[in-house]
Image (cartoon, rainbow, N blue to C red; front, side, top):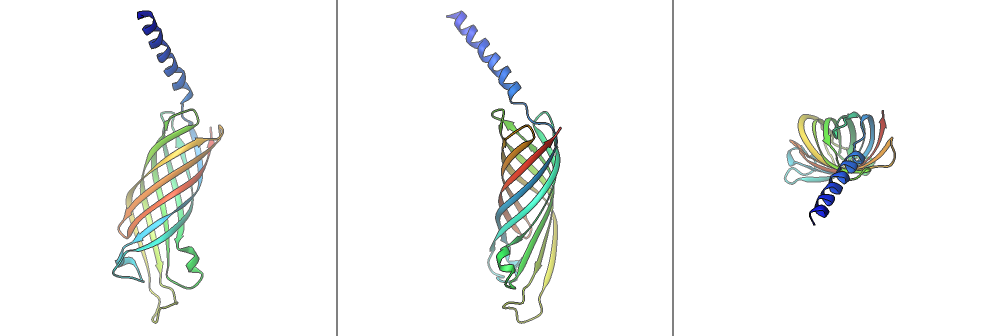
Length: 194
């Protein structure tokens, strides 16, 4: 019985050692191209249309990023994305809101298998909100404003490594800005250069 227990312990240790080798994260330079689909709850004081209630807008963004993945699972990146709120209605002359973000990000990937990982991401973000009042339903001159802010944002992601050079990333991000709260789910295509 004692020999069986020792043998089982040795097999478990060997399995962990072999598995740890298989779970090594990708490392080296990387590039991202991504799409984000989410929403912005615009605070009343920043809205042209409804000064008493929060306005909920659809948020569509495209972006790209560059970074470096370290052997310990930590990734640092610089990302840039831009998009519009309720893009479809821009075509009809209603109020338009555009949002642009620059992120310095740090993430940790916990590898659950040789090709799949989960992990958190934290970002220092510079966000710019540009708003233009449209001519439709507006009797006076159109107003414009621009709002800039630095903020900490956070997210989580799941990565599926398709090959040595290509990874598919599903992500969720949340940000609480002075002008409102954003939530977005994203799809990223990540290329690795060693």
